[in-house]
Amino acid sequence: MTIVEIINVTKSFKDTEVIHNTSFYLKKGRIYGFVGPNGAGKTTMIKMILGILKPNSGKITIFNQPVEHNSDNILSRIGVVMGPSFYGHLDAYENLKLIANMKGLSFDIEKLNEYLSMLGLKDVKKKKVKNFSMGMKQRLSIAASLLGDPEILIWDEPINGLDPQGVIEIRRLVHFLHETKGITFFISSHILSELDKVITDVVIINYGKVEFFGSCNYLLQEYNSKNLEEAYLSCLAGWR
Ligand SMILES: Nc1ncnc2c1ncn2[C@@H]1O[C@H](COP(=O)(O)OP(=O)(O)OP(=O)(O)O)[C@@H](O)[C@H]1O
Ligand SMILES: [Mg+2]
Image 1: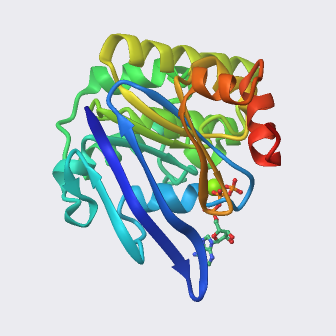
Image 2: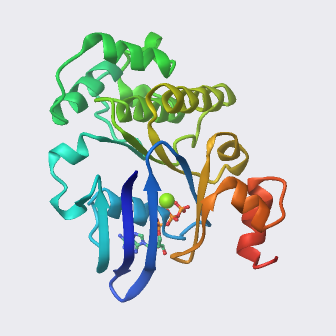
């Protein structure tokens, strides 16, 4: 089942086109890596999927509904990580509670505690977020994205700034959520060796154009490569 569909999408900022007539789709239960060089258009694409930015042309649907009608009922089915943004003067627990309220979710103290534990934040839940390290904020972003049991998690650089233990914990979390709840993931990251451990499918974007879209197996075959990093470099270098 297709849950996100991007059809011939183009996006310009002023007169610079940064996404060119791009199409791909996300199927339920798959784990997509969204990769490409700095400035390729990943964050822009993610913002369009979420309805934060509007394409100049083309169409995006989520759960078979156009993004522009992106009502609360769609947003509550999506969990997002996009750079930590929290209230510094509130603690971790209060921030999650606030986000749950804003998403219109019923307050579930056990769930909040479970997410904080899962992300290794149980001991610091009463600490003000302004005193969090970057990795702790990143963990809190991931916890926040899980509120409301979303069907799809869209994570823009989720493991930026995480310590090695944190990276392993997130890897386990992805596997756990995928296996137990069949959650779909769309994860943008530059850490290809790590993505390689979790993803089933890849979207490679370069200068606002999709250069590859398909399963990891197909990617490795296509570029006669041993791993994601090698295939990625070959794809972008135009080697075959
Ligand atoms: N609000 C904006 N106004 C003007 N240009 C923008 C804006 N946002 C992004 N861009 C430009 O669009 C292009 C794509 O940027 P984007 O942030 O989507 O890249 P990215 O793939 O997420 O890069 P990174 O890997 O560094 O996060 C870049 O050239 C960027 O300068
Ligand atoms: Mg980005």
